[in-house]
Image (cartoon, rainbow, N blue to C red):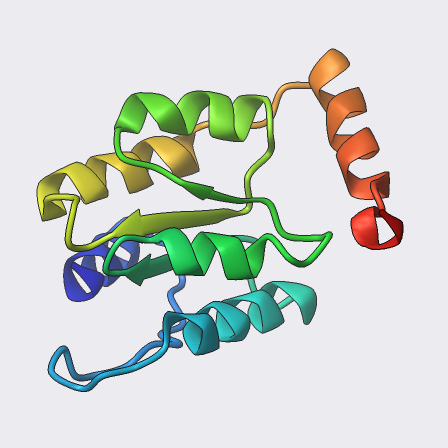
Length: 136
């Protein structure tokens, strides 16, 4: 899936930095790779990130620990629209074990083609960015 999505990005004039493993057989911890993607966004080297692991759960959970990340685990292209329009998601997470490659490509296309909406959704995003749950 990673190779297919990377090829699609390059074929559609996007830059792609590969922060992942090169071996499907190698056992890795998705958390480590999520942190690499978070670092790319934090450093301003990337506006968006795409995380792929078995279910996608650990990537999304890890990435969303950071206030500047809005990671969304998607299973359909239709879910991409509100994730981007309402939440201004900046990290797409996909589960390779539960999502077909052609579906993942369509999700990615829709995700990148959809812009964030303003007005009340911008206000919500500002509120979200200001949340501090560490004191709860």
